Length: 267
Length: 267
Image (cartoon, rainbow over all chains, first blue to last red; front, side, top):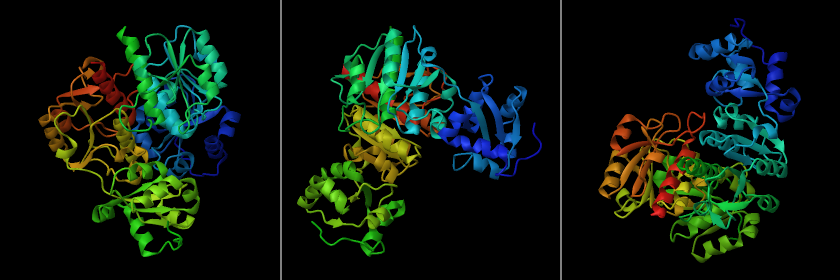
């Protein structure tokens, strides 16, 4: 366990980790930051993912299990002052544990494979909190993979990682493919591709969800563009039984993904 | 239409509206703020709710329909400078329309009445964004009412109003009752009371959702306290089919409310 506390927020090591808050540096360094005990614990379950762990003295005492798991796996553990942690963390009240992780996404063809039952595609999702919540929900619903298209937010954005609550480390995630390529792969793998959009003629109650299904989720404000709607086998809306104009993107995704998951399990 | 632009952020009128950002003043003045075209439009549909409307010149041009509806209903419309709007609004990029509204909640006995099919109860929900999202989802799912217990966030909190996307004006909302009183009323009205909690022995897939159902949703971090679980007829968890530890509160609520809504409509 590291005994020398890092106290200088300007040290090269701290600066190198800090810059991973920016996408350009994440892409350059092929690494990202995962904050908090839950994310770090899940990251450590994947061998070789955690490159370094930063921990405050207080967090080391509270999360001795995590710190010793990291040390046991040969991960360099750096004791960090509160000031250094505040510099590295992207939250207002840092939880004292922060891992530098290697990127975990896989190529589209590896994320989406024949035999998959449920896949979520984030096309044009721009809010990282929403994207992370959809990732977490897809994981909970037992999805086989989540695809972030090139028009969506970066899955390694700090807010997305936090909102995913560890799910980024649980299931195959692909990122960066154009939506047409993603849809092509999904169809190639025998999946029915449904675009979730308020413009859908049929509702969730009217479509057969028993087969392998991929859901495409769009933008928070304006849904999915026409060219994406045309790529899908069907455009489906969540029925609105009350007066609300629409649902929040992440809640709509939850309703769709769980409707699929539950129907597939009823068979 | 008002022709004299308010430009002084220290004027008594602006100060009186501004202080409604705080709960204590909302309670004292029996009023709250609703921001943005969607919320203002929905508020105007309820006669007598909008007490004053603030609008920037830009928003007046963009939303002439809303401004004339307000003026037509006898609502005082104040033209506000960008600076005044920034002072009043609680968002980083104000949309130029802001209404001072009278409180819209109703007594518990009026919100929850015999014959109700679906009610959402927010017990111990502390995050206003989550609370507003649950309110919006309950509206979309066709709920008859939403109850905020005394341990939950204030429904008139600015973030909650924004996240509700107008739903605060769509269905009866009760606030301030202790959870035991709310559960008593729900049972009195013939509803089965289900507590949504990861500790539930049965999952959503195993319970009969066809009858009148009230769902109790708990705290983001720690769920529902034992005394609330004991009050419920049953504790039910959303099944986790993957590796996620849990769902986000608002997404779990969406899955539960829509499962009820869809089952009730299948009958």
